[in-house]
Amino acid sequence: MNGNAPLPSWNEGAARAAIVEFVEQTVARGVPVEERIAVFDADGTLWCEQPVPVEAVFILRRLAELAKTEPKLQDRQPWKAAYEHDNAWLGQVITEHYAGDDTKAKTLLGGVGAAFAGIGVEDFEARASSFLRSAQHPTLGRGYLETAYAPMVELFGYLEANGFSNHIVSGSGADFMRPISKEVFGIPPERLIGSETVLEYEGGTITRKGQLGFLDDGPQKPIQIWTHVGRRPLLAGGNSNGDLPMLEFAQHQDTPSLRLLVLHDDAEREFAYTSGAEKALAQAGTSGWTVVSMKNDFATVFAAADREDAKAVVHA
Amino acid sequence: MNGNAPLPSWNEGAARAAIVEFVEQTVARGVPVEERIAVFDADGTLWCEQPVPVEAVFILRRLAELAKTEPKLQDRQPWKAAYEHDNAWLGQVITEHYAGDDTKAKTLLGGVGAAFAGIGVEDFEARASSFLRSAQHPTLGRGYLETAYAPMVELFGYLEANGFSNHIVSGSGADFMRPISKEVFGIPPERLIGSETVLEYEGGTITRKGQLGFLDDGPQKPIQIWTHVGRRPLLAGGNSNGDLPMLEFAQHQDTPSLRLLVLHDDAEREFAYTSGAEKALAQAGTSGWTVVSMKNDFATVFAAADREDAKAVVHA
Image (cartoon, rainbow over all chains, first blue to last red; front, top):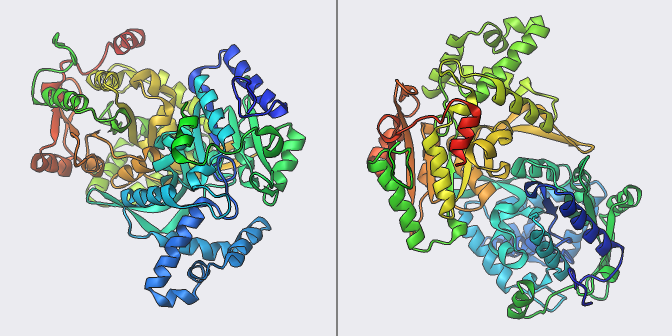
């Protein structure tokens, strides 16, 4: 960390300068506080999505569990891959998805939808909370909550101190992150937007059905922002092609706007990859969006690995 | 108005006492502020829905306008009824809907969906705003914004002063009320939930498509509350059978909860009807929910009819 207020865990550079300039201009121009809406993708923008996005790990564990109790599922994808820990098959899903072939993705999503079918939404949150507070990231030597990027958490605090409302607009489900979003990111549950599972209401209880309602990715992101917030954001942050429409949507004629694209170029401290971000990176180049290099712009990547210490840093 | 703080435009009685007791208990028991979620239906709960709900008037005007420019629509429902001001046909839609026959409702909803197809969401909001600020209620001698119930607006202020967050969960579209909800009800756009039109995103712009996504009524209301807010409410207010699941959902094991059902029994100052509210009233009786009699519990029904005066009362 350098000692520079207001963003000590960011290095001096174009990204930090663009953020500070945007925030100062927004305040100086007197943009009404209610219009200061900031939206951020989650996986790969706020916390690690490698080698497998966090909710996918949670769902795969559940699928493996289901295959264990119901052996006929052991020969059927995606239960088979989950049960056999077949990361190659899962990697193919993502690679083929980004290449435009969603055959395997549909198979996977079918299983994903069914994974928690019949479970109440409050029960689901309790399971997500328990997983997120106990499971360990496979290579980083820390729990999943500690894979949150400290500079982004710090950015949230800086934005909030300047009248912004931060929202998460994730390709994962909102209910998955809600039990921990306030604690880890300072963002309350009503500011989480995500992919939706079909829900059913009966007799005071809401239950998850076995189908995905929609995937909150690509053009769905600006649509869901509008549906939930009713305003265009001034600031959008993402890291992949699926965030491109959301970043494009964060524009106003008369007020400053900022588009942040997190670039994973730090193999030493996190991961280095641009797969699935090629179009977004190209657009950032032509549109003058701000690319955030994890290697060069982040003075710190993660908060202290110990949960109690991490909390102290985050909420200091 | 009586002079009793905190709700001077409510008469002394069981409803006012139940509200004050609920709020005082919530505060006394130290229920965390973030759990103090209150949700309210709009039409017939916060403002007049007779003789025709406000958004329906707006849409019918648009359908009539379309029929005028495209004469072949003049023989087709629902454009025909809109063009001929055939309130009898429209009344039938509602009567048959509540009786369980949605044939005409489907015809109407087809036209409703198409009414603003191809129009951008920001343009739609500007049209809704302009309509709401200029059109007059057909019988009450006041603009639609002045058909807001003063005791409910006052209740919102009281709840907010006690740490509650108020949300509107309407069968109408959120985008219809968003341009005026802060001014009239003190509720910002991100706390409006409603029926959804299918939206399309392209090149920085969100456009309304010609289909209804879903109607935010009945079991959809608790589902949408969960999706947007991520919590069970402590307080729910409604006035019809379509609000029943939402009221039922507002319950917690360990904290106080309150269910308000507005009863339209004031033919002199507003309207008197229970059509479409029979099941809700029956459930209120058996479950001990609080029925709010407009005749007996509202000291005032509407704020001053002049817009400027009304605002002064509302935000005093």
